[in-house]
Image 1 (tube, rainbow, N blue to C red):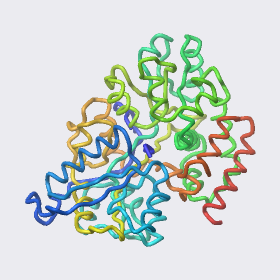
Image 2 (cartoon, rainbow, N blue to C red):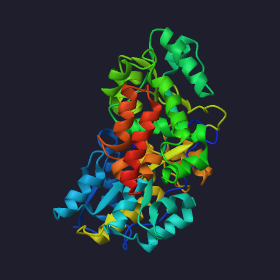
Image 3 (cartoon, helix red, strand yellow):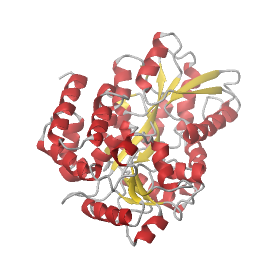
Image 4 (tube, rainbow, N blue to C red):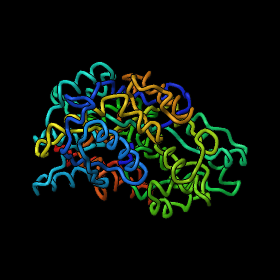
Length: 441
């Protein structure tokens, strides 16, 4: 998912993103390095990306082809990656490589026996250049199955500097200040926030930032593992906090109805498009890629961000996400598939997308000069330096039926809550019922 996330912070604080370090130099891709050792071979790569993200990832695949001779075909799965890949496997048409956007889905794939362990070369690259958290999230029962290639910083609020200046507002430092600043922006004639309620995953990200800051990291970890029930008072408190924003029709462009009819790209357009309807949009660093590529905004000047502010007496949250490359057992070309992952583990591969924009890599061997603007560069630096301190997107850690499927589970229930945020306790009870069923406990 875009998510699906799921990043850019200007030098910002401990900027979240501690997403550990995802790729690292792995050296040439195939046994023959650049001698086109895979000439004539072809692999299919499936992933959630579409639009600009798909185009930019295609540049990475094209560089792999140039290096090895192996041809690639990318298939966009949409957000329901688990369902789509499962049906392709059952139909005997399994892709060779899948870019998995959720820890929970990677675990599910491994437990179903769909995945091949990654090559020793890839694992060595991970050990040498990634923060341990990335190996942990890419492993199941001690075996490395996933290489985190693209990371997301999901604790950034993007804004139009012009809109905030016009309203006389400065980036807020607390959630209460955020709502107050939003009211001031709204009073100046522009809605405060553009909310992508048509995409349920964006609403989980809103919740996770509020919850991590308000409830703290220990409860966040417990809720992510479903060791804490969603009926816990801390969940009700977080929903109540989030509801203060969701219920205020003056703060959200188009009100709740407008938000529920706005997808993620549309939410960015409402702030950075030709006819702005809002001053701010919350989402990960990938907002910058859309603002730059689709609307010609210069990141750092026409589009900027501030860290998601602290809630109550908590610390400012640092939530991250990422897309992991996995090799399917049923894929027809194991050699080329493993070679692609070896390539994705190199700074060379990350540099291709870093130069295109809308990308963050936790690869500490990637030259920061590869990034095209100072905002992204500073965010990437903090990402690499943050190590293990970040918390991975909670819904991405859940079973797909609860945290990663359109029209069901957390996505749908938070959309229902956006539509009517009047009963946080009732929403928490529904979330717990859906979680219990998905976690089978």
